[in-house]
Length: 138
Image 1 (cartoon, helix red, strand yellow):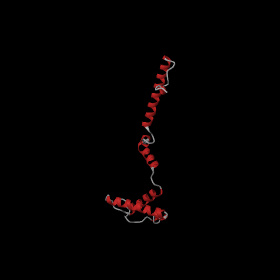
Image 2: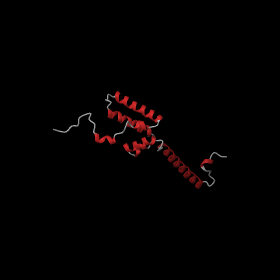
Image 3: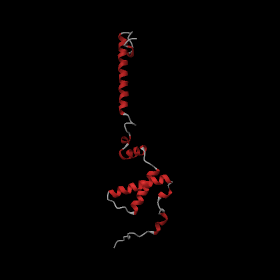
Image 4: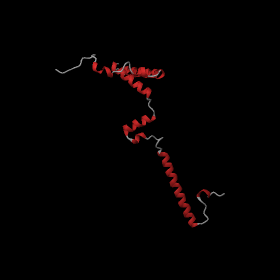
């Protein structure tokens, strides 16, 4: 016969580690309202998915809501999570790693080199040749 704890029995040795009414009581008033709103949003979302709202699930919703209220997610958080999920390449968005701009700069440098080379060749043929920007005259 295997040991099964009965449902609904409280483990007294864990009482010193249990929180009082939850972390919502420790928040100041405006953050308390925001966390309560997020808690109810999470619970209503879980109800819509057909999940039973048990005591541990309500406590989990409270903890998630308080965590999101105290430490809201920003773009740095999402970049870090994307990097953890898919490597460094997924972190770099076009805004932070402008490939097109780099291509334009590279093409411009190539064009400048080509014009310089043409100017040097023209100067070797004709010492009075004008630089590339002055070809239209004065």
